Length: 75
Image 1 (cartoon, rainbow, N blue to C red):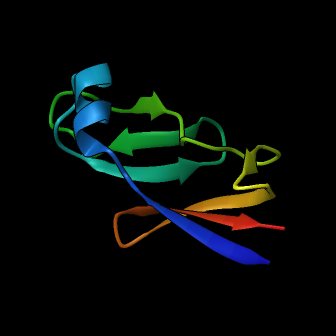
Image 2: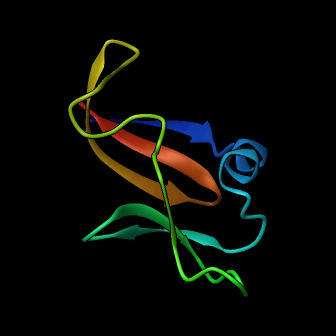
């Protein structure tokens, strides 16, 4: 298994959702969400790749966030 990292584009997320504060976390029920905003309970977002997608010729098996970067575990 290899790990491929990609910077999280916080500016694009803010432009798309209007949310400029909060933390991105993995929710068992909703996928990736932004929480901790003072006015909004939760906003759903998509990672650039999800399980089953192909990235650099490899199949994505899992997605996580480490040090403000998307981390894709691939086979």
